[in-house]
Length: 364
Image (spheres, rainbow, N blue to C red):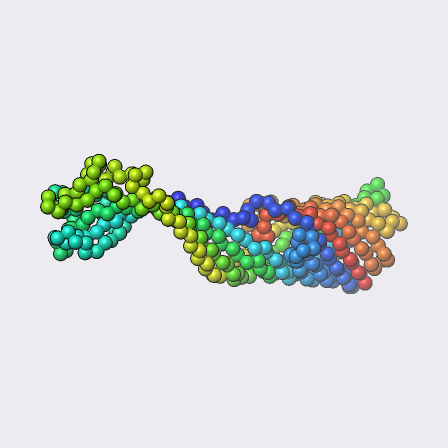
């Protein structure tokens, strides 16, 4: 028996590119002592508008001790949608099963059997007294009956496994602490700010449904020699016309059925997979440049942000860049629209996301 096993390979491997729409609504309440309490709501779609990918709600408290510095702490609860995952595995097997008949002293067949190849090794030879001999061992039944060789079956199997994990929603709890430094206006029109944020994300354990399908394709050739017979008057000696007694000469071309037997079976198994709980430690660093000219209601901006996994030696998990503009309807109301490019290879997947970001802020 020989087999070649291949580990499961996921169809979700490799970077996926998709379009998305990210929407944000924010409310901010100015408090005494330069404090501000904020409430943010978010909703994101995947494949543009075809499916939801995330919802979130967050609360934060910020303090601005002077015109340059702002520090804040916040909590966000979010629900993340994970797409269905398909994994595949292929196992190939081939083997030979020998077929024997048990004959009594008169030569009548008592029964037939197909022992595994490990039970009787190699191609059979026979002694002139009718005992079964494989070159090493002499075989008799307990009753003294003798084995007669009938041929063998050769089979080839291909087993295709497909394991599908259903799509699911998973909650996350996120706590963040950040500090932002903003410069004065440069050349009376530009502001540069740098924000550093430590982000702790707790992801609870989640059970998800999974379906495994195994499809087996089997081809069997049955090898039997039409050119031999038994002469019991000469001590059970096997007579093979035109061949030696060694069945190594019984080849496929001359001793197989004209058509092989084809068989296909399918097995389906439903199960549950447990996604273990996780704790993620992330450092987010963002550099923003704004065109902030006095008297303008429009504020164009551009920023780039890096996400580093602190627990994995500051591995870069995600990078995000955006360009857009904010428009002040009044001192209290602001609208924003922008383009976001998000490349990530982290717990959320391996994706390149092109998103339209639309936001509204109300400050009172």
